[in-house]
Image (cartoon, rainbow, N blue to C red; front, side):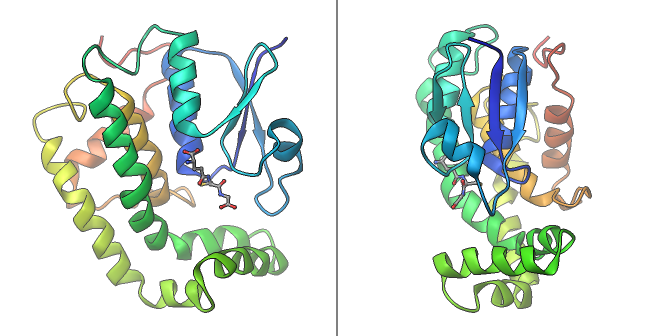
Length: 223
Ligand SMILES: N[C@@H](CCC(=O)N[C@@H](CS)C(=O)NCC(=O)O)C(=O)O
């Protein structure tokens, strides 16, 4: 028994989503920052190597952000992230954000991600590149750096309809829900390195991001 522990990579959108849900619900937790290039504590706690993983008060550790979010909503139902009648649409939104949108934003963020590891040392940058290229093929990182403007444009075109959707409302479906947390998580790709790079051409999305940033354990954004 004990307090909750979130195993995370600091630049992971899935981890940002779960951090914000925990804050929204006012649940106490500690963060275990996992070394992306090693993952020892994550493997020991969860038996697998993907983040996030969350150790619950019972000592059980669960992985996968959808599973974690659903379990958190059962254990800490108020405030809910699944407003009545909206569960399905929020899960569908989150699935889109965590797959298609994630792919576009991840590619657009490669230069920042590489710079993040380069700041930690040449060897760590090289290892990060190796992990990426084993998955996506040789030359993936340099190609993403070369095509950065084009990849950012692709990402922004995927974000543009969301900016429209947020023109007349604070959250995607009016009242805050799981889809908002998933979108917020993905926007972390545009803030790696500390600077907010959400395009000024997407002002409603920037305002949404600021609104989500203000959510803390003590603030209910629907209030
Ligand atoms: N479906 C999983 C995806 C989690 C995921 O892809 N996590 C990334 C961090 S952003 C990861 O652990 N990557 C490690 C790897 O690909 O080896 C979830 O929603 O939690």
